[in-house]
Image (cartoon, rainbow, N blue to C red; front, top):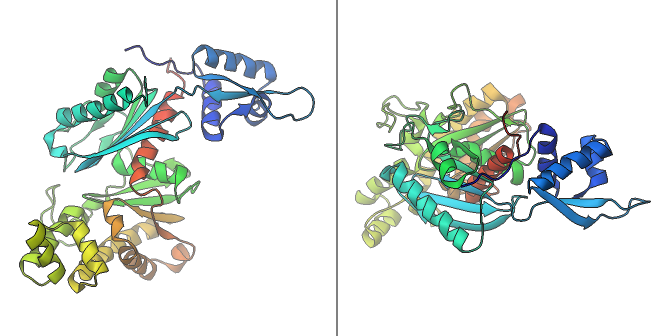
Length: 397
């Protein structure tokens, strides 16, 4: 497949990113914002039009004198964001301004391995193409629930992803679609999405905590995602919170994830249902044959004391880890997202209580701890943002 053209230089890249974020803009305004002479801007726009990335959008509003011409991104440009979780995959296709065109979510089992999961992703993207939502993708962003070498585009020893270690995700997807591909940890794409279009808009120093099957933390420092030297910064799910706790998927004992991830909460809920200490969970077990983390949330809403206790216990453990991070990092915001964020304000209140009680007053007096505004869209929103930044970046020479 012939790759879609990319800009030649940083000047062209800045034009594309400005149009992505601000929409159709007059040539005069582009020149002012980017501090380009009229001749230089015209030359760069001519080249971008030749590449099929921008086009004229008609006359701009008059600023006095001769009217300038609007410039807009090619309306046929499309990006795809793919958020692969432990039990589901979400795909969103957007236009060049990152407005959603189509989306699909489907249950998957990540333990089936990369070939099976990617084949299903390919099937879903093909259905979206047949449906007229995209013809040729300009870029793909992919998030997976495990450590990722961002430089190499491969998962590295992911505890809950058997068979995925060092699988060449970036090369595989790029080869299938003939477009640039960016691969990152799922919580990193979530923090990008939330900062771009959620409650953390333009916040430059924040923590995004994903609480789902696994637990991770996306870190933004000075407006940039901090991934660490090898790409595994923020892996807070494997901080030990109880040396005598249960075995974790990583091989250690008492990790936060083993105490309060989605699988851990379902495990404790099942034990409560079988022992009949929780009437709400026992009823769900009799009715459905199993219980889930979501059932704990439902039971808590109904006032079941065991369900309320499970959420509070988990919130205290999570809050204790976050209190240490607040003392270390001093963020300006903490956002809680992921599937277990659906446990809502009971969980949030417990996390806040521990953070505010255990961290220094100076670090918490202006610290909001809030739920994600984008919810399940945070991952795909961040994935397409990263894909567009890669596709709109200049080709390496």
